[in-house]
Image (cartoon, rainbow, N blue to C red; front, side):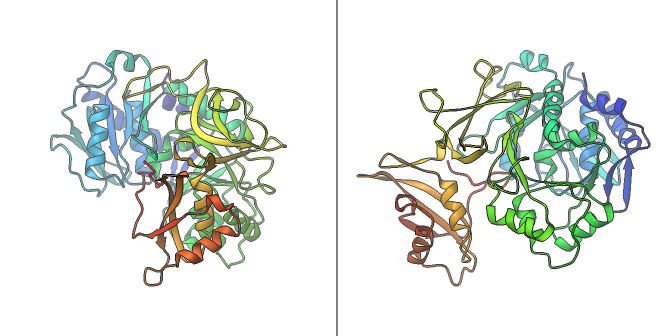
Length: 478
Protein backbone atom coordinates (compact mmCIF):
# COMPACT_ATOMS: atom_id res chain seq x y z
CA UNK A 1 0.00 0.00 0.00
CA UNK A 2 1.18 3.50 -0.86
CA UNK A 3 -0.54 6.18 1.22
CA UNK A 4 0.02 8.92 -1.35
CA UNK A 5 -1.59 6.77 -4.07
CA UNK A 6 -4.54 6.26 -1.72
CA UNK A 7 -4.90 10.05 -1.49
CA UNK A 8 -4.98 10.31 -5.29
CA UNK A 9 -7.85 7.83 -5.47
CA UNK A 10 -9.96 9.69 -2.91
CA UNK A 11 -10.29 13.13 -4.54
CA UNK A 12 -11.41 14.89 -7.69
CA UNK A 13 -8.27 16.22 -9.45
CA UNK A 14 -9.96 19.63 -9.78
CA UNK A 15 -10.41 20.07 -6.01
CA UNK A 16 -8.13 22.71 -4.49
CA UNK A 17 -5.64 21.11 -2.10
CA UNK A 18 -3.13 23.88 -1.31
CA UNK A 19 -3.35 27.67 -1.25
CA UNK A 20 -0.06 29.57 -1.05
CA UNK A 21 -0.29 33.30 -1.63
CA UNK A 22 -1.87 33.74 -5.07
CA UNK A 23 -1.23 30.11 -6.04
CA UNK A 24 -4.11 27.66 -5.84
CA UNK A 25 -2.90 24.10 -6.44
CA UNK A 26 -5.45 21.37 -7.09
CA UNK A 27 -4.97 17.69 -6.35
CA UNK A 28 -4.40 17.28 -10.09
CA UNK A 29 -1.63 19.90 -10.00
CA UNK A 30 0.05 18.26 -7.03
CA UNK A 31 -0.05 14.76 -8.46
CA UNK A 32 0.98 15.89 -11.92
CA UNK A 33 4.20 17.37 -10.55
CA UNK A 34 4.72 14.61 -7.97
CA UNK A 35 4.42 11.84 -10.57
CA UNK A 36 7.06 13.49 -12.78
CA UNK A 37 9.42 13.57 -9.81
CA UNK A 38 8.54 9.97 -8.93
CA UNK A 39 9.34 8.74 -12.44
CA UNK A 40 12.70 10.51 -12.42
CA UNK A 41 13.56 8.99 -9.04
CA UNK A 42 12.54 5.52 -10.21
CA UNK A 43 14.86 5.90 -13.20
CA UNK A 44 17.75 6.46 -10.79
CA UNK A 45 16.84 3.64 -8.40
CA UNK A 46 19.67 1.23 -9.06
CA UNK A 47 19.53 -0.27 -5.59
CA UNK A 48 17.05 -3.11 -6.11
CA UNK A 49 15.12 -2.14 -2.98
CA UNK A 50 13.25 0.75 -1.34
CA UNK A 51 15.80 3.58 -1.34
CA UNK A 52 16.17 6.13 1.44
CA UNK A 53 16.03 9.69 0.11
CA UNK A 54 16.84 12.77 2.17
CA UNK A 55 14.90 15.96 1.47
CA UNK A 56 16.43 19.38 2.06
CA UNK A 57 13.84 21.93 1.03
CA UNK A 58 12.37 25.24 2.23
CA UNK A 59 8.92 25.35 3.77
CA UNK A 60 6.18 25.76 1.22
CA UNK A 61 4.32 24.20 -1.69
CA UNK A 62 7.56 22.78 -3.10
CA UNK A 63 8.15 20.76 0.09
CA UNK A 64 4.75 19.11 -0.27
CA UNK A 65 5.26 18.26 -3.95
CA UNK A 66 8.78 16.88 -3.49
CA UNK A 67 7.70 14.79 -0.48
CA UNK A 68 4.81 13.35 -2.45
CA UNK A 69 7.14 12.61 -5.36
CA UNK A 70 9.60 10.74 -3.13
CA UNK A 71 6.83 8.61 -1.62
CA UNK A 72 5.10 7.99 -4.96
CA UNK A 73 8.47 6.89 -6.32
CA UNK A 74 8.49 4.04 -3.83
CA UNK A 75 11.18 5.58 -1.61
CA UNK A 76 11.45 6.20 2.11
CA UNK A 77 11.52 9.92 2.96
CA UNK A 78 14.08 11.26 5.43
CA UNK A 79 13.50 14.99 6.21
CA UNK A 80 16.63 17.14 6.53
CA UNK A 81 15.34 20.24 8.30
CA UNK A 82 16.54 23.68 7.21
CA UNK A 83 17.91 24.59 10.65
CA UNK A 84 20.22 21.58 10.90
CA UNK A 85 23.93 22.25 11.03
CA UNK A 86 26.21 20.42 8.60
CA UNK A 87 27.38 17.98 11.27
CA UNK A 88 23.78 17.16 12.27
CA UNK A 89 22.77 16.65 8.64
CA UNK A 90 25.75 14.38 8.04
CA UNK A 91 24.91 12.39 11.15
CA UNK A 92 21.37 11.76 9.89
CA UNK A 93 22.70 10.78 6.46
CA UNK A 94 25.12 8.29 8.04
CA UNK A 95 22.62 6.91 10.56
CA UNK A 96 19.96 6.28 7.91
CA UNK A 97 22.49 5.21 5.25
CA UNK A 98 20.94 7.58 2.70
CA UNK A 99 21.04 6.57 -0.96
CA UNK A 100 20.00 9.88 -2.53
CA UNK A 101 19.40 13.46 -1.43
CA UNK A 102 17.04 15.99 -3.00
CA UNK A 103 18.38 19.48 -2.32
CA UNK A 104 15.95 22.18 -3.37
CA UNK A 105 15.64 25.94 -3.38
CA UNK A 106 18.41 28.34 -2.41
CA UNK A 107 19.55 26.42 0.64
CA UNK A 108 23.33 25.97 0.78
CA UNK A 109 24.48 22.43 0.15
CA UNK A 110 27.59 20.98 1.76
CA UNK A 111 27.11 17.33 0.98
CA UNK A 112 28.11 15.00 -1.87
CA UNK A 113 28.86 16.60 -5.22
CA UNK A 114 27.63 13.74 -7.43
CA UNK A 115 24.66 15.48 -9.06
CA UNK A 116 22.83 12.95 -11.22
CA UNK A 117 19.70 14.94 -12.09
CA UNK A 118 18.32 18.47 -12.07
CA UNK A 119 14.73 19.59 -12.42
CA UNK A 120 12.30 22.42 -11.69
CA UNK A 121 8.86 21.93 -10.17
CA UNK A 122 6.37 24.47 -8.79
CA UNK A 123 8.89 27.19 -9.58
CA UNK A 124 11.65 25.59 -7.47
CA UNK A 125 14.81 24.12 -8.96
CA UNK A 126 16.37 21.12 -7.26
CA UNK A 127 19.23 18.71 -7.65
CA UNK A 128 19.39 14.99 -6.99
CA UNK A 129 22.62 13.93 -5.31
CA UNK A 130 23.96 10.39 -5.28
CA UNK A 131 25.25 9.51 -1.81
CA UNK A 132 27.95 7.10 -0.84
CA UNK A 133 25.92 5.42 1.89
CA UNK A 134 27.59 4.11 4.99
CA UNK A 135 27.20 0.43 5.78
CA UNK A 136 23.78 0.21 7.46
CA UNK A 137 23.83 -0.09 11.23
CA UNK A 138 20.46 -1.81 11.03
CA UNK A 139 19.25 -5.03 9.32
CA UNK A 140 18.42 -3.98 5.75
CA UNK A 141 16.15 -6.95 5.06
CA UNK A 142 13.99 -6.35 8.11
CA UNK A 143 13.79 -2.63 7.31
CA UNK A 144 12.61 -3.35 3.75
CA UNK A 145 9.85 -5.68 4.97
CA UNK A 146 8.17 -2.83 6.85
CA UNK A 147 7.13 -0.94 3.68
CA UNK A 148 8.82 2.15 5.19
CA UNK A 149 7.53 5.59 4.28
CA UNK A 150 9.33 7.91 6.74
CA UNK A 151 12.28 7.95 9.06
CA UNK A 152 11.80 10.69 11.63
CA UNK A 153 14.00 11.62 14.53
CA UNK A 154 12.87 12.27 18.08
CA UNK A 155 13.65 15.63 19.66
CA UNK A 156 16.68 14.42 21.55
CA UNK A 157 15.84 16.58 24.58
CA UNK A 158 17.39 14.17 27.08
CA UNK A 159 19.90 12.23 25.04
CA UNK A 160 20.69 10.80 21.62
CA UNK A 161 17.95 11.27 19.04
CA UNK A 162 16.39 8.04 17.79
CA UNK A 163 15.37 7.21 14.25
CA UNK A 164 11.66 6.35 14.22
CA UNK A 165 10.54 4.23 11.26
CA UNK A 166 6.94 4.67 10.08
CA UNK A 167 5.34 2.54 7.36
CA UNK A 168 2.59 3.59 4.97
CA UNK A 169 0.15 1.39 6.87
CA UNK A 170 1.14 2.90 10.23
CA UNK A 171 0.71 6.44 8.94
CA UNK A 172 -2.77 5.65 7.64
CA UNK A 173 -3.77 4.13 10.99
CA UNK A 174 -2.29 7.11 12.82
CA UNK A 175 -4.02 9.87 10.83
CA UNK A 176 -7.34 7.98 10.91
CA UNK A 177 -7.20 7.74 14.69
CA UNK A 178 -6.18 11.39 15.09
CA UNK A 179 -9.03 12.58 12.90
CA UNK A 180 -11.56 10.97 15.22
CA UNK A 181 -10.85 13.99 17.43
CA UNK A 182 -9.87 16.67 14.90
CA UNK A 183 -12.78 15.85 12.54
CA UNK A 184 -11.11 17.54 9.58
CA UNK A 185 -12.94 17.22 6.26
CA UNK A 186 -13.43 18.76 2.79
CA UNK A 187 -15.16 21.82 4.23
CA UNK A 188 -12.09 22.79 6.26
CA UNK A 189 -9.37 25.27 5.37
CA UNK A 190 -6.35 24.70 7.61
CA UNK A 191 -4.03 27.66 8.19
CA UNK A 192 -0.51 26.23 8.42
CA UNK A 193 2.56 27.96 9.93
CA UNK A 194 4.76 25.14 11.26
CA UNK A 195 8.02 23.72 9.82
CA UNK A 196 7.10 20.94 7.40
CA UNK A 197 10.25 18.91 8.07
CA UNK A 198 8.89 18.24 11.56
CA UNK A 199 5.15 17.97 10.94
CA UNK A 200 4.46 16.98 7.31
CA UNK A 201 4.27 13.22 7.90
CA UNK A 202 1.17 13.30 10.06
CA UNK A 203 -0.42 16.74 9.78
CA UNK A 204 -0.35 17.73 6.10
CA UNK A 205 -0.74 14.13 4.97
CA UNK A 206 -3.87 14.00 7.18
CA UNK A 207 -5.29 17.15 5.56
CA UNK A 208 -4.64 15.80 2.07
CA UNK A 209 -6.14 12.40 2.89
CA UNK A 210 -9.35 13.83 4.36
CA UNK A 211 -9.77 16.46 1.66
CA UNK A 212 -9.15 19.73 3.52
CA UNK A 213 -7.54 22.74 1.86
CA UNK A 214 -4.18 23.63 3.43
CA UNK A 215 -3.47 27.37 3.47
CA UNK A 216 0.25 28.14 3.76
CA UNK A 217 1.47 31.26 5.55
CA UNK A 218 5.18 31.82 6.12
CA UNK A 219 5.08 35.45 7.22
CA UNK A 220 6.11 36.07 10.85
CA UNK A 221 3.88 39.16 11.01
CA UNK A 222 0.52 38.76 12.73
CA UNK A 223 -1.06 41.27 10.34
CA UNK A 224 -0.20 38.98 7.41
CA UNK A 225 -1.38 35.86 9.23
CA UNK A 226 -4.72 37.40 10.13
CA UNK A 227 -5.15 38.85 6.65
CA UNK A 228 -4.66 35.35 5.23
CA UNK A 229 -7.08 33.91 7.79
CA UNK A 230 -9.67 36.50 6.78
CA UNK A 231 -9.14 36.08 3.03
CA UNK A 232 -9.21 32.26 3.12
CA UNK A 233 -11.94 32.01 5.79
CA UNK A 234 -9.72 29.53 7.62
CA UNK A 235 -11.63 27.11 9.83
CA UNK A 236 -8.65 25.44 11.56
CA UNK A 237 -5.29 26.79 12.66
CA UNK A 238 -2.33 24.60 13.57
CA UNK A 239 0.50 26.47 15.28
CA UNK A 240 2.89 26.67 18.19
CA UNK A 241 2.29 28.61 21.42
CA UNK A 242 4.63 31.27 19.99
CA UNK A 243 2.25 31.85 17.08
CA UNK A 244 -0.79 32.11 19.33
CA UNK A 245 0.95 34.53 21.71
CA UNK A 246 1.80 36.68 18.69
CA UNK A 247 -1.77 36.64 17.36
CA UNK A 248 -3.20 37.45 20.80
CA UNK A 249 -1.42 40.79 20.73
CA UNK A 250 -3.49 42.00 17.78
CA UNK A 251 -5.50 45.15 18.43
CA UNK A 252 -7.62 45.07 15.28
CA UNK A 253 -11.31 44.21 14.94
CA UNK A 254 -11.06 40.92 13.00
CA UNK A 255 -12.78 38.29 15.18
CA UNK A 256 -12.19 35.25 12.93
CA UNK A 257 -15.82 34.07 12.68
CA UNK A 258 -14.95 31.04 10.51
CA UNK A 259 -12.53 29.53 13.06
CA UNK A 260 -13.81 26.29 14.64
CA UNK A 261 -10.60 24.70 15.95
CA UNK A 262 -7.28 26.17 17.09
CA UNK A 263 -4.65 23.53 17.91
CA UNK A 264 -1.46 24.39 19.83
CA UNK A 265 1.39 21.96 19.31
CA UNK A 266 5.21 21.62 19.31
CA UNK A 267 5.58 22.84 22.92
CA UNK A 268 3.65 23.05 26.18
CA UNK A 269 0.86 25.64 26.03
CA UNK A 270 1.19 28.35 28.72
CA UNK A 271 -2.13 29.10 30.37
CA UNK A 272 -1.57 32.85 29.93
CA UNK A 273 -1.26 32.40 26.16
CA UNK A 274 -4.44 30.35 25.99
CA UNK A 275 -6.39 32.88 28.05
CA UNK A 276 -5.11 35.78 25.95
CA UNK A 277 -6.10 34.07 22.66
CA UNK A 278 -9.56 33.23 24.00
CA UNK A 279 -10.03 36.80 25.24
CA UNK A 280 -9.01 38.26 21.86
CA UNK A 281 -10.87 35.92 19.46
CA UNK A 282 -13.48 34.24 21.65
CA UNK A 283 -12.10 30.79 20.78
CA UNK A 284 -10.33 28.38 23.16
CA UNK A 285 -6.95 26.90 22.33
CA UNK A 286 -6.80 23.12 22.15
CA UNK A 287 -3.63 21.23 22.95
CA UNK A 288 -2.88 17.55 23.04
CA UNK A 289 -0.09 15.07 23.47
CA UNK A 290 1.64 14.32 20.18
CA UNK A 291 4.49 11.83 20.38
CA UNK A 292 6.60 10.95 17.37
CA UNK A 293 6.44 7.26 18.24
CA UNK A 294 2.67 7.29 18.73
CA UNK A 295 1.02 10.24 17.00
CA UNK A 296 -1.79 12.29 18.53
CA UNK A 297 -3.47 10.13 21.16
CA UNK A 298 -4.76 12.76 23.62
CA UNK A 299 -6.63 15.96 22.74
CA UNK A 300 -8.23 18.62 24.93
CA UNK A 301 -11.65 18.93 23.31
CA UNK A 302 -14.00 18.88 26.33
CA UNK A 303 -12.05 21.19 28.68
CA UNK A 304 -10.15 23.52 26.35
CA UNK A 305 -11.71 26.69 27.79
CA UNK A 306 -11.96 25.68 31.45
CA UNK A 307 -8.56 23.96 31.65
CA UNK A 308 -6.43 25.18 28.74
CA UNK A 309 -3.23 23.85 30.32
CA UNK A 310 -4.62 20.29 30.20
CA UNK A 311 -3.63 17.80 27.53
CA UNK A 312 -7.20 16.54 27.51
CA UNK A 313 -8.46 12.98 27.45
CA UNK A 314 -7.50 9.90 25.42
CA UNK A 315 -9.20 9.67 22.04
CA UNK A 316 -11.49 6.76 21.38
CA UNK A 317 -8.89 4.59 19.63
CA UNK A 318 -6.39 4.68 22.52
CA UNK A 319 -5.94 3.27 26.01
CA UNK A 320 -3.80 5.18 28.52
CA UNK A 321 -2.17 4.07 31.77
CA UNK A 322 -0.17 6.18 34.24
CA UNK A 323 2.30 3.92 36.05
CA UNK A 324 4.86 4.32 38.81
CA UNK A 325 8.39 2.92 38.67
CA UNK A 326 7.14 -0.47 39.85
CA UNK A 327 4.63 -0.61 37.00
CA UNK A 328 1.57 -0.02 39.20
CA UNK A 329 -1.14 2.58 38.46
CA UNK A 330 -0.66 5.85 40.35
CA UNK A 331 -3.38 7.48 42.42
CA UNK A 332 -5.53 10.29 41.08
CA UNK A 333 -3.55 13.54 41.06
CA UNK A 334 -0.15 11.83 41.21
CA UNK A 335 2.32 11.85 38.33
CA UNK A 336 3.02 8.56 36.57
CA UNK A 337 4.76 7.61 33.35
CA UNK A 338 2.42 7.86 30.37
CA UNK A 339 1.83 4.49 28.69
CA UNK A 340 -0.38 4.28 25.60
CA UNK A 341 -1.79 1.50 23.43
CA UNK A 342 -3.59 1.88 20.12
CA UNK A 343 -3.18 2.30 16.33
CA UNK A 344 -0.25 3.99 14.64
CA UNK A 345 2.56 3.09 17.02
CA UNK A 346 6.00 3.18 15.40
CA UNK A 347 7.17 0.20 13.38
CA UNK A 348 10.76 0.25 14.65
CA UNK A 349 13.63 2.25 16.08
CA UNK A 350 16.37 2.41 13.47
CA UNK A 351 19.61 2.55 15.50
CA UNK A 352 19.95 0.54 17.60
CA UNK A 353 17.42 -1.55 15.70
CA UNK A 354 14.31 -2.45 17.67
CA UNK A 355 11.34 -3.76 15.74
CA UNK A 356 9.19 -4.24 18.85
CA UNK A 357 9.63 -1.23 21.15
CA UNK A 358 6.30 -1.77 22.90
CA UNK A 359 5.46 -4.27 25.65
CA UNK A 360 2.21 -6.16 25.00
CA UNK A 361 1.23 -3.29 22.72
CA UNK A 362 1.93 -0.61 25.36
CA UNK A 363 4.41 2.16 24.58
CA UNK A 364 6.19 3.84 27.50
CA UNK A 365 6.64 7.50 26.52
CA UNK A 366 8.94 8.78 29.24
CA UNK A 367 6.47 11.62 29.89
CA UNK A 368 5.21 12.13 33.45
CA UNK A 369 1.49 12.88 33.45
CA UNK A 370 -1.19 13.23 36.13
CA UNK A 371 -4.97 12.76 35.87
CA UNK A 372 -7.51 14.89 37.71
CA UNK A 373 -10.92 13.90 39.06
CA UNK A 374 -12.64 14.67 35.74
CA UNK A 375 -10.26 12.46 33.77
CA UNK A 376 -8.24 15.26 32.17
CA UNK A 377 -4.51 14.63 31.77
CA UNK A 378 -1.77 17.16 32.59
CA UNK A 379 1.84 16.97 31.44
CA UNK A 380 4.25 17.40 34.33
CA UNK A 381 7.56 16.83 32.57
CA UNK A 382 9.96 14.25 31.22
CA UNK A 383 10.86 11.27 33.40
CA UNK A 384 14.58 11.75 32.68
CA UNK A 385 14.53 15.45 33.54
CA UNK A 386 12.90 15.20 36.99
CA UNK A 387 15.01 16.74 39.79
CA UNK A 388 14.92 14.86 43.10
CA UNK A 389 15.22 17.26 46.06
CA UNK A 390 15.46 15.31 49.32
CA UNK A 391 13.02 12.74 47.96
CA UNK A 392 10.62 15.32 46.49
CA UNK A 393 10.15 15.65 42.73
CA UNK A 394 10.69 18.93 40.91
CA UNK A 395 9.59 19.17 37.28
CA UNK A 396 11.85 21.63 35.42
CA UNK A 397 9.05 22.49 33.00
CA UNK A 398 6.84 23.71 35.86
CA UNK A 399 9.56 26.05 37.18
CA UNK A 400 10.39 27.27 33.67
CA UNK A 401 6.75 28.17 33.05
CA UNK A 402 6.87 30.44 36.10
CA UNK A 403 10.22 32.01 35.26
CA UNK A 404 9.18 32.67 31.67
CA UNK A 405 6.25 34.75 32.94
CA UNK A 406 8.68 37.25 34.52
CA UNK A 407 8.89 40.34 32.29
CA UNK A 408 12.69 40.41 32.50
CA UNK A 409 13.06 36.79 31.34
CA UNK A 410 13.09 35.87 27.67
CA UNK A 411 13.60 32.12 28.19
CA UNK A 412 14.85 29.82 30.93
CA UNK A 413 16.17 26.34 31.50
CA UNK A 414 16.08 24.58 34.88
CA UNK A 415 18.48 21.75 35.67
CA UNK A 416 19.39 19.61 38.67
CA UNK A 417 22.73 20.13 40.38
CA UNK A 418 24.17 17.53 42.71
CA UNK A 419 24.04 18.48 46.41
CA UNK A 420 25.73 16.58 49.29
CA UNK A 421 22.73 16.82 51.67
CA UNK A 422 19.71 17.30 49.40
CA UNK A 423 20.71 14.90 46.62
CA UNK A 424 19.89 17.52 43.98
CA UNK A 425 18.81 21.15 43.91
CA UNK A 426 17.30 23.13 41.01
CA UNK A 427 19.39 25.78 39.28
CA UNK A 428 18.30 28.06 36.44
CA UNK A 429 19.86 29.47 33.31
CA UNK A 430 18.24 32.68 32.13
CA UNK A 431 18.26 34.53 28.83
CA UNK A 432 17.34 38.07 29.96
CA UNK A 433 14.85 40.07 27.93
CA UNK A 434 17.30 42.96 28.08
CA UNK A 435 20.95 41.91 28.29
CA UNK A 436 21.93 45.34 29.58
CA UNK A 437 19.55 45.08 32.54
CA UNK A 438 19.33 41.42 33.63
CA UNK A 439 17.01 40.51 36.52
CA UNK A 440 18.57 40.12 39.96
CA UNK A 441 18.56 36.59 41.46
CA UNK A 442 16.75 37.73 44.60
CA UNK A 443 14.03 39.24 42.42
CA UNK A 444 13.57 35.95 40.53
CA UNK A 445 13.51 33.95 43.77
CA UNK A 446 10.77 36.16 45.21
CA UNK A 447 8.80 35.87 41.99
CA UNK A 448 9.02 32.06 42.08
CA UNK A 449 8.09 31.83 45.76
CA UNK A 450 4.76 33.52 45.05
CA UNK A 451 3.54 30.39 43.23
CA UNK A 452 6.04 27.58 43.90
CA UNK A 453 6.89 25.53 46.97
CA UNK A 454 10.22 26.51 48.48
CA UNK A 455 12.01 23.33 47.40
CA UNK A 456 11.11 24.05 43.76
CA UNK A 457 12.68 27.53 43.72
CA UNK A 458 16.10 27.55 41.99
CA UNK A 459 19.02 28.09 44.34
CA UNK A 460 21.15 29.69 41.64
CA UNK A 461 20.48 31.83 38.57
CA UNK A 462 22.96 32.17 35.74
CA UNK A 463 22.55 34.69 32.92
CA UNK A 464 23.35 33.27 29.47
CA UNK A 465 23.17 34.54 25.90
CA UNK A 466 21.56 31.39 24.49
CA UNK A 467 20.29 27.96 25.47
CA UNK A 468 20.93 24.67 23.65
CA UNK A 469 17.95 23.63 21.54
CA UNK A 470 16.99 20.58 19.53
CA UNK A 471 16.28 20.89 15.80
CA UNK A 472 12.57 21.34 16.58
CA UNK A 473 13.21 24.19 19.04
CA UNK A 474 12.88 22.29 22.33
CA UNK A 475 15.29 22.72 25.20
CA UNK A 476 18.09 20.20 25.40
CA UNK A 477 18.48 18.83 28.92
CA UNK A 478 21.04 16.05 28.53
